[in-house]
Length: 175
Length: 255
Image 1: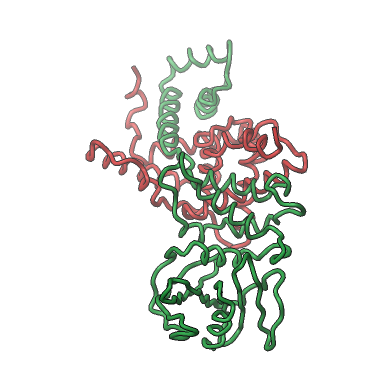
Image 2: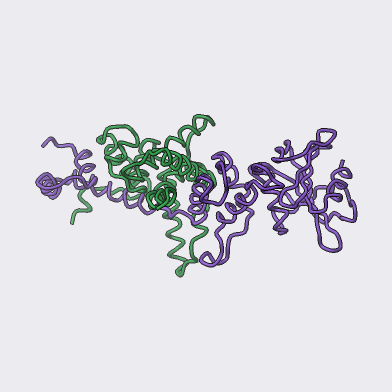
């Protein structure tokens, strides 16, 4: 198998993870697509230099995160989330009303995710959207695993609160 | 076990607990409302986050593959020496000019967008008798635009630099973005359908590889049978066509 084919075979399964991360680190879809491309370009160059990861997902996530941070520093701006037309390309809904509700819920959830502190948002994106384990996310972020768990947990609770799911009574959800 | 609902819920949902430790936590959750609530809240937040997962759009996957293709060693793509620089790959595949390339109607049957871009790069960057070395991305993209003869960009009311020259009559102007650079593309046609493109930009066009110097700081190059003529008067201008005399005439008429 040629080098590039081997690279694509190893890394393309992680494309969704990289794309999800890029979307939450940039202002719009176009910037995210550029970031994904740049991530793969850097990864490909490293691959050709014989730097091969054990798992592509965390490796690409680390590259993507570093590129986004570099860009943010260069442009003196902070990564932000602006939900845009991601839903536009989806198939037309059969049930328009149900789809409308889903859109609202999704928009609420996007807004809630965007409203989280950066550290919690990135931790949640890495674990819940990119599918990294806490240990892998810790390696990407270069922080202790326990810190990742704490950020993810606080972020999840905040998300639940922000989308209006907070229970008034702790025991209200007990079976 | 020290009672720390936050930590316990985080550990429990991490999926890393196993064996006796997990059973211990599960038993505790059944007895402790506070911890149960912590887990329930976090689960709700996790579900909300997971619902936001996006699938990588096809054009992004194409761009990934194109980057690898463009940045691969030459023999794989049929060239004989050297590599396409990474920076060139980034510029050529940057979103602005990808946006006005048509997407294939049937993905399975047609070449993908990236394949077209890659193919264009391969064609226009391959060293040849009339095209030593590689061409800058903007020049290559303009040559590609000339070859394809399909409307690109948006119509604009920009005034024609010249109404006509050597039988070529101005027909339209469109605004396009190539490699992040806004360009006004004027089209001239003859009655027999042949045409010339005149590109005006705000910044100087990169010099084509293999170009010949002309008086007044102008240059011209022949790229795959297409004459490319560059002048800086009255502003950065690139004229392209397969009729060298008409190309030069239009370049001068536009000054």
